[in-house]
Length: 71
Image (tube, rainbow, N blue to C red; front, side):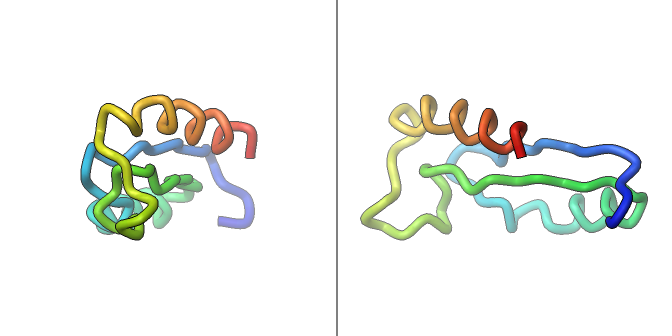
């Protein structure tokens, strides 16, 4: 939304992807919220050569959320 009533930072589940919760994001944005969802390196949508296991992705998730929050 151009003037969101709030911003939600969302971290998708391990081995999942941002697209797995599209219905939730649509509902939140329809209510005026901006939803920021980084794709983590353990995502099923991450290209095979760039994907990490969930333990390896943990540090990346923290960084992803810090960078997203700064946005």
